[in-house]
Length: 369
Image (cartoon, rainbow, N blue to C red):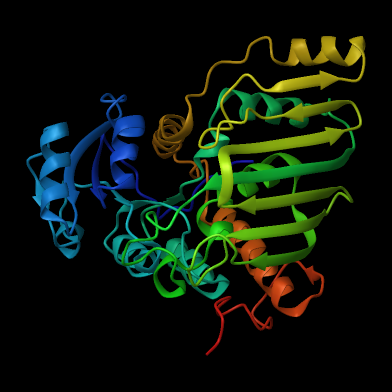
């Protein structure tokens, strides 16, 4: 799957990468799970946040004295290798472009940007840049998900049939009592974009690319601009079908992926924020398949869960001069599904993928005034 990076990519001379985390909300999780457990790979060099109290709190917690409120102040610093962007989604595009132009590697939380047009601009900018961009899709990085991927890649699963991807979470009015959540301009979308996007990435990571989408969206749970309920039917390029459902009105919280193949049924854990963790339920069709799966997994080594696994794989890829474990093109495929769901919900029709510049929602999936 990996290819050699173009010659202009950074050749990082040291094993330890110096990281600046921008946005100390979700950014704190990146530190706790991804950077702090791997001091041999990462040095948390600086923090950036507009909230002085939060900046001070996270800085004291992790012993980071270098704290700034001005993002641009990080760009010219030679002692920073990676800028990790954990700000509200509406700010991502400009920050990514500035960081790439400054020659930095970039990690960015979901959603990467707010349209296919913008993600294509990011892909073009990265192609010219010295640094690499890694979007965050942490659900892939768990032993359950990676064991499933190994079974599929080994050809043991056989023909894919059908699957379900479910995001049943709870978000109340208190969650949306925030200046940027629940608004098209700043959050860029609702449950589809900010909550279900990870399980959808995991579904395509294991079940393959999508061919067509039919979907409905609604706002039924909270008084917000964006959707909080989604139901969609995907036809995969393989001919398989997948049903995805998401709501923020569940009375408990689960995330679930269940995939049915010719030779095996695979189901994730139901942990809402870490369904990629093992053990997954693996139901082989017969003893022969079971033995082949056992053999395929006999030398499996734990990959590290969530941000720990993704950051470790990022470091390894950069040291080897290879593409990141999640690429900007992976983010494009994710946002292409988002675009298709919104387009189908608006039009009441099937939407065929891929989606290019001639599509009416290529430049924006947001409602037009």
